Image (cartoon, rainbow, N blue to C red; front, side, top):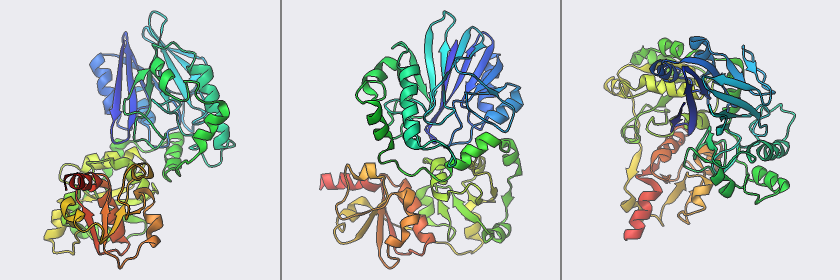
Length: 457
């Protein structure tokens, strides 16, 4: 028996490849099917099933393309309704994969169809559970990500989740391994651990959903208090996972290099934006006016969803040479399939054509600390970060809501921006630039750099 976790740091997401005696299965696949088909080939196995724990909101799963290429059926848990051919399993139904058995445990709460898959080994022992977004390490899934037209309130779903965990998961042996769908950083939960798997016995000690530290009503209150608004692209991803989507290979093949003139001709089309995916430093040194910056060297896909919001947005891409395919692939993971093409030769071709460029001014942490009490400082970190430590005089607006709070700022102010390390602050700078803020300065190395200077001063 072989169990392999495929963890994608950009999405904080885990999919799983399982092989036993010449047969294999995949759980919660990414949109890039080659990852799994290569493993099928390497293990000389037949892909028998594709299991989905639920309709994912934070990414577009690869079940449809993988099924088409492999012939393996797609399996969802009870209550799921798809607009494509799939097997809707019954609670406690079992599926054989080689010498092992995968048992369906319907665990509604995060969503109505949410399902945990229990793997029973060849000796009949409960070996591990693939919990999807039902149970995370240290936390549980949010109860508010169901479709807007759901008949269930977050409070009702939180109650279901408590019941599911107590009835289906807490009763399993302590030596069962927990394999969740997400780790720390995902918007699908609040306080996940950085580890990506653990023993159930340990979770019974430290996870409030399992250790008896709260009653059902207290659990519901914990889950439904201080919930951040779900990213607006989540429901669009759910619909794609339910209804279908274009194959990634077709998206990659349809995208093309655009000349500067063709790029410019498309720039001013309705619902079209320029997305610059280079490094923060490159963007600050020169970029196309009115472009968004979201660099490939960070949590690219989730920030694309958070900032651009609407998956129907038409995207013109600026990327480093050789990174165009990666950018389009990572856009597709969160359902942003409308990439019109990329600038041939990248930003350099724009610059060499004599077109207007803009820059973002920078300041070192040391120079900033010398003037910090005299300037307007904008902190774009999350509330959970600023509550731990921040500059007392700074204005705090999380990046995810910055554009909606833009009227709280004055375009005439000199604004010094920082996040934790410099990635998010450059995204913020690009947003402010697009909205007429021209006197902005990015603080290099962010709050971590500022803290070091203050400690050493």
